[in-house]
Length: 176
Image 1 (tube, rainbow, N blue to C red):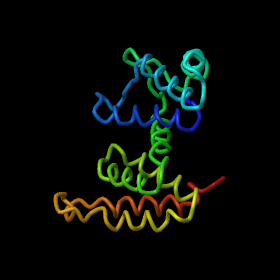
Image 2: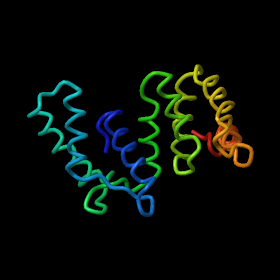
Image 3: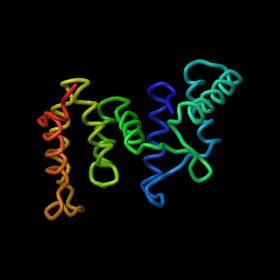
């Protein structure tokens, strides 16, 4: 579902978080919750409540029946393409100020479930502005310093750094 950048991102992040604990890693959003997210997005854009409800119903219908970005799943809807869900979640993670973004990236860096979402978010940041380069490097340097984690045996930062380097140096990944 795409309700502008923030709306689709909210659906993505909601489903990505839910899929972390879902059976088979596929989560769904009830039609009511989907409609509520869409309504909130329209209200946030200045529509009155009645207009927001009407537009949200139309958008949910188009998104689930015509564009088929979200498909029926377990009594609700979910992304049919996992990478699209991860991309929308990554966009949600990169909204806000730099401190919020860094905090979110730190929170999801370690769990394997969030690896692709983390990489998509970092890729988006690095292509958006050079100012993020130092922030990402600093984040990677500090990721495995928490003494409560199994840092020495299973460090996260080297794998993430290698994935970033591969994405930036592999010609197949950089073709227009």
